[in-house]
Image 1 (cartoon, rainbow over the protein chains, first blue to last red):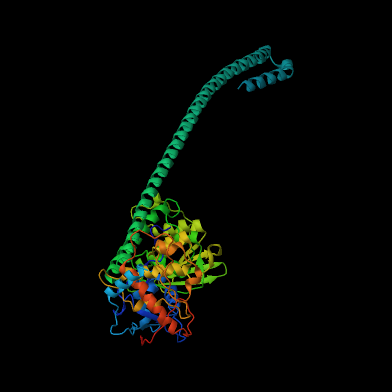
Image 2: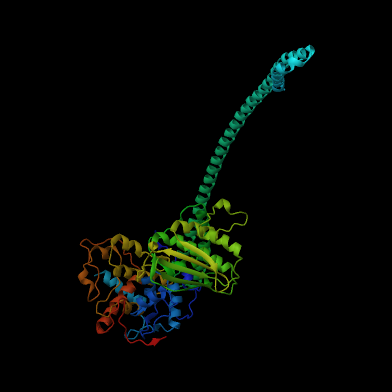
Length: 122
Length: 463
């Protein structure tokens, strides 16, 4: 059925998005954190199982890339579905958390590589 | 005449005693002569008649023999012709069989090449996983190839063969219709409603998808391009029903009768019966309806166009699973790992998540470390840390170390001399998880218990 990790499925990706490949909002990045809005609202009856499964997976906060990985779907495809759900108010985007590291909000690559070398040396 | 002579003679003999007394002697002589002459002439006449009849009989016998001979000849000729005809029919059937076999073989080749194109399109997206333009191109290619594959499979069906593609897993009914919509040009016009929670068993998925695709193709072609094609799925006592309504102009009753006979499978239409303007759609529907024991009917729709109704027997339906494993075509390294090693799904998924993030990062750009770590720690205080799938990590992996602080894979007894196979991104992700775990440990009292889920640290919501 699948070779080299390819797994075919009768439902094609363009049907899921109605042929759209571009999300309605361009702020979604692979690392954008998402969380289902739990306000008791049900998805409309027209929503497919894909949307439902996506929302169910996203009960906790997940990054877009993680969500895509859990669903075994390409990130760009999930971005389209996610942005629709965000538009509908079923999914909330969380701003990227900032670590309170002293003096910097981004770990430098050099530092990471140093730590890696150190760990390898253990 | 001979009998008249005999009667005359008897009359003469009878008259003799009456006449003999009173008549002159010449009268008596005349009577006697007549009594003698009449039998003689009767005998002569009888002999001549017999001779004549005998000749006629002879002629008839000859004629009869002639006819019998000709009859034999004709029978022989008929037998020969029948034999020749049978041979010819056999030859034709063989020829037709050979042609059909060739058509099936070629169609299957075309179909499998279309599926290869679809696979390549999916791989293309996986390589550029966060680029919408690539996704757009991939979708277009996929869509074109899907229609291509459908046409090829139609030819196979018209040759009376089973579809080339097969699916192992059951497919929920709404997804059957969506899958079918993906194989027609105007898939955006298909509007599906109703989900009775039924799935179609794996072996019937492909034929049913093809049937619905052909009906949808007809419905979209026979109705104005700005109208929707409405598909309703219902559960019924004996299985499930799919109704397809178009808003076209319908069909005149005679044509409708013909179409119904073809679509229901009542009238078999093979590849040789298609004619100059081949209309394969309904013939395929009929073929598969016979295969699967579907009941297909086409009637006037209340919307003015046509309504196609497909009744799927209960033997082909199952209760749908709630959590599907796969939602759409995917390219994923984790499948092999999972199948081969039977690692716990969570573990495999972590690997997938790692790879997905790695893949999304354009070369040269480092993954955002902040995004990573918190997302992989469960709020219950058991951070699910990304585990590298290196040989070192998989050699020994006691389940007890799943909880608590992030751990490194135990060092092997013999030092691994092979070059490190991790990338800087991988290492970055690991370190990110390290920091996240400490953050997660600090906020362990998060009430969320869903899995997968995350410890959230002071973030603002943004819808």
